Amino acid sequence: MEGQSVEELLAKVERDEAEKLQRITVHKELEVEFDLGNLLALDRNPPTGLRHAGSTPEAELRALARDNTQLLINQLWQLPTERVEEALVARLPEPTTRLPREKPVPRPRPLTRWQQFARLKGIRPKKKTNLVWDEVSGQWRRRWGYQRARDDTKEWLIEVPGSANPMEDQFAKRVQAKKERVAKNELNRLRNLARAHKMQLPSTAGMHPTGHQSKEELGRAMQVAKVSTASLGRFQERLPKEKTPRGSGKKRKFQPLFGDFAAEKMSQLELLRIMNSKKPQLDVTRATNKQMREEDQEEAAKRRKMSQKGKRKGGRQGPAGKRKGGPPSQGGKRKGGVGGKMNSGPPGLGARRKGGQHQGRKRRK
Amino acid sequence: MRPLTEEETRVMFEKIAKYIGENLQLLVDRPDGTYCFRLHNDRVYYVSEKILKLAANISGDKLVSLGTCFGKFTKTHKFRLHITALDYLAPYAKYKVWIKPGAEQSFLYGNHVLKSGLGRITENTSQYQGVVVYSMADVPLVIPPVSGCGGIQTCHRLQEPHT
Image (cartoon, rainbow over all chains, first blue to last red; front, top):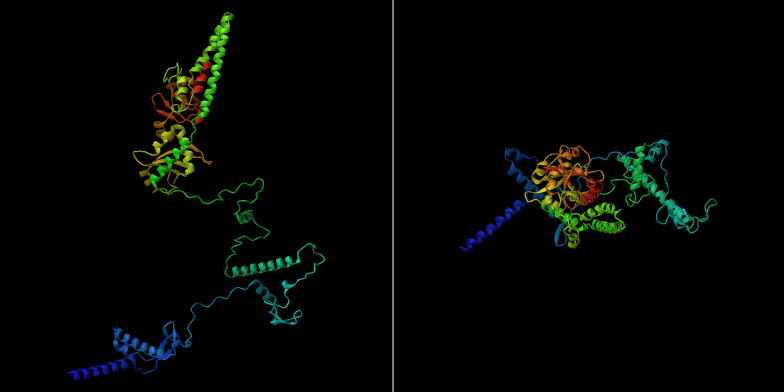
């Protein structure tokens, strides 16, 4: 029994081995071509199996794919390997097939201004030597760049030309001139680029200083110039009669139409509360009333004195005194406004005022 | 259409408070529904929440009016109260002036009211106080601008030459 099982096992192992080999080895009539750099396997065998399959070629296709992939991997295992961070890696050779273009061919660019001019004049680029003999250092130096032959910036002595101001800094002047040249070059480069892409430079958005510009264009240019400061034109000087530009602030933001109604109500009530608390207690009116009352009392006192004098003198001025006595008494009855805050005024004042008059009288005739 | 900003609300409340004083909070906070102020084309409308929701469905340029117009903001952002606010201000008015029937017609046609035409006037009305003018039948007529009212004191003073 055991012997039989051992034999069986051995047979089984043999069969497995054969199967494996069978799986690994693939028989092809035409050799498959490989481009291992692109992981490409090219099978030129005629697909007879597929033609026989008919309407459902899935199984045949899968078998074909498996065979070809097996062959490709067999080839990959034959490549030289190396170890990269604990992984066994095969080093692929250079790809042999040339892949087609990913993007379309670039359009020819429009010529720059210089190129147009050179073409017009027939100017060809002169061939220049790479190195130039430098007398000062006694060696061949490059024409431009690091350690160039005639380096302006390294000069320690600049003669002041006869026509220039003796106080002028020639070194600074040289540096400034260089900066200007660089800036000009950059501007021209950007202009060429803008022309090539048929765009306009963002710095000169539609504004070109010809001699003949309309009023609107000039106005626009002036506006842009004014706003092109660090403070966005807020502190620029203005002409005597020029008005401040309206709407130069941020755009306003409003509350939403259906905001929180309760919150809106609360904020309005709060506002009302603050308003009521800030209102003064009509001191002005009370002060003026006080003043007027005092004046009236003085007048009344005067009239009484005069009427007394008049009585003593025989009453000629009596009626006059009586007449004059009329208005002050009415004035005394005057209530005058401690506005709506009568309740808040001192009760003494109110009491004195109301003494001897009709209470709650509304009708005046 | 939009809600009022803080500044605009303050200006409007100050104006309305001249006529109804602290009763303004009864307009803001009503027990029978949520009412709010909305601004549309510089006019302030007092509108209930329900109507506001309906009005929101109308585009701004086609919307003429909603709720009750209380007044408008002028070009220089001052608030001018309109007569359409009378129905809401009259019940809460603090200072009232009643006009006799004889003077009422003349007043409604734009003439000033003489002292003889004045029926009743609330106590303690100071000069330049905001008032609401009523007819003798207690029908509110007008909300005159504040500079129009002379106040009780001037009334009293003016009586002297008459007697």
